Image (tube, rainbow, N blue to C red; front, side, top):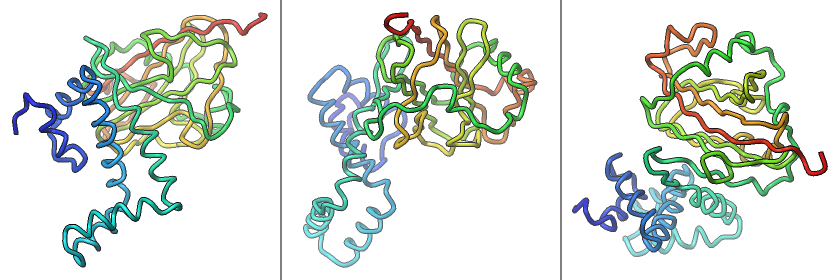
Length: 274
């Protein structure tokens, strides 16, 4: 396989046969070549479909019982069934979030709004109603950590740009992608004001994320959040540590050398008429 020809990598992408370096090479090439990007989107749909246990069981049964031409026909026929359109639609929706290249910043996750429900949640209501494991003011210490990447993690918003703008009450959605098992916390802060903990939250109560996985805040099927005030520059901070490390926000010095820290900023504007 010639790594200089990205199309040679496509055939192995959906089957999970590429190394991290080969995937990175393919992603970068696709973001320079629209036709290659379109092909990669199609392969991503196949990859996501193959991750589904029911699909894998279907293929396994077909491979044991039928000659090779019938395998492809049976798989295609299965997807044509109306009751399976939902899975294909989800795969297609996720496929368009592949990656947005931002030069020296590396790969950054693009996050679509959730069309399944109208915006109904305020950013503050996403927080868990349970008392956090540590006092909320201790979360502010995590904003003193220097940004760094020790593992492959990405953080995204549903608007492009280094510092997108939102008006109070406008829908917002956040995505985080973790390549391996990890303990994570996602925080939002405006200036030096109080910190909002967006993950873990009332939908996902544990800091433990099993990778590789992409999570949305709010989760898929829960609609979007609405931006909370006050107006000003907000900073998102994703802190990730290995799964055997306790993410103790009251004592970051005990685990800071093992952490990956990713930040994004966005600006909140006053609602129209305010």
